[in-house]
Length: 275
Image (tube, rainbow, N blue to C red; front, side, top):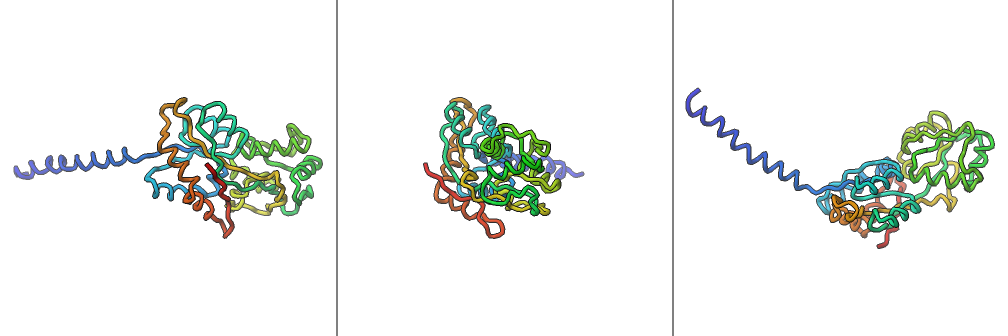
């Protein structure tokens, strides 16, 4: 190799160093937040529609950790997330009172539906969720519970309590300790009943012979809230970026994006934010 070649090779390598540094700095400067949210919201496909619009508006990336609402709230208590996007108002208000989050913002709603075999062996079809659960218990029909302390699981337990069953223990009752999609898959394979949020149901493809059997009961209303983790409790919270997300998602722009998300032409979530 001539002298020029020996000189050029290290020079070329050195010339690449500033480019690598620029790329590293660019990545490091991309703002991001962690959002703990529900499996039902994530599996509905909403975030794939919503979060790219937020990034276009603000430049902020959002990493979603999809767990049950109870686990999401615990992530907030531990400081493992910057934003909580959940659906159990009683539990949300408790975490506000404990001082782990700054404020709860109502965001949007949909409803729960009772899903079951189209043949409806327990004859539950109608609008009364309490009567439906009584019938399922009476005939020992198969029922899949999330069993994961999620918002859906909390709602299910409230409905069982209103049916006079504090802790369902009939042989057909199975707690999967799983997300909404997995619970629907179990119900599909076993021909069982299951409580689901409508958003996940509309996005669910492995329906087999499952159908919506109970809907329209006012008690099936499903409200979502969004909250920023308190930086006083957890100083590592990216509070500025997190608050930007909350401000955007409750704004007319963010609410419009939520309203525009549809599956098969049907709207999945209905915005109802107020500051």
